[in-house]
Image (cartoon, rainbow, N blue to C red):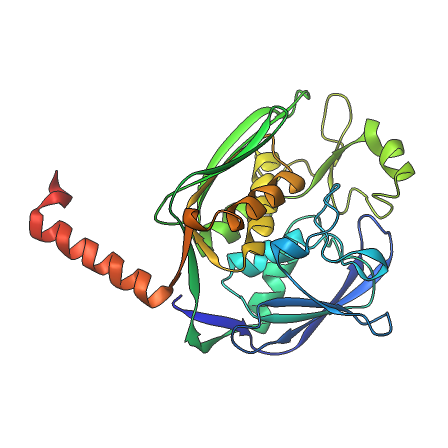
Length: 306
């Protein structure tokens, strides 16, 4: 996928916001090269267009939000992860409410939507953000770190004091099909004992067994059970990819996370952007040329056979 991509035509989807509980319609529109992913609240007069960028992130409590105040757009992470997963980097998103619809709690509905409507290549190479040196952030016992790697690798560890989760680790090497099959269908999750507390904070007003994995003290409440044995850490990787996509480019690097969340992901992105020597922006055509030259050198020296 050397070239930038957008969707082939306009498409809309309607659903419930998991935190607001409000019915919202999201409309995705094709966008020209170098426009990135942008959002606009069409239900508000004179609402600004907000670019999906690490520096426009507002609140990060139980979701990632863009912008601030009444015109903020909440819970963007699953949609952004799917854009990244399918290599779509230019879309103009209109929404008539405060929050992206949660659908089934995963990225699967957005994957289906984009595959149905189709994507189109644009006549401009995409750029890669190449990690050159380690960048790390820590908050208490939680941490996240970028290190150099030839492609995006997400190595995630989560720990929850629940018998169905405990400690889970997964290393995911990004590829479009792997994303669709192994990450995109993993649902968000929550605990029955936290429901009252979260609702008092104005969250999960639209949460249900239809859009989240719910756990009581010992088991998964959903009658259908889990989609993957380790669905919890797979969903964490979905969230991580969505949050890292706010860097605005495909990533060539490894991100390792330990007990991380949306706030830590955003802190890591901001620290990377504030450390210019730790990364470079490289056109995909140049990156491909370097990869081919490296492969040719390996054949010439016989290093592939050692």
